[in-house]
Image (cartoon, rainbow, N blue to C red):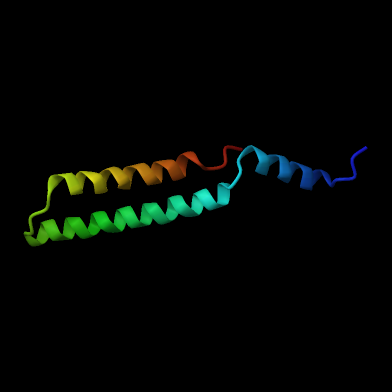
Length: 78
């Protein structure tokens, strides 16, 4: 009945179930890298003897855990 290629139909159905997945993954990767780099910089400042506010460090640790977790949860499950 349908003249659409079965592979194309499967791909379009998958995209309609999770739109913008590629863009989300790129953002999670960028945010993860930024959070981890920020945490490494903060840790190097602590190692050099500088004082940091504990709130800032906790935010960086939280972001370094949250964004890779979101990237992991957004993976393909098939």
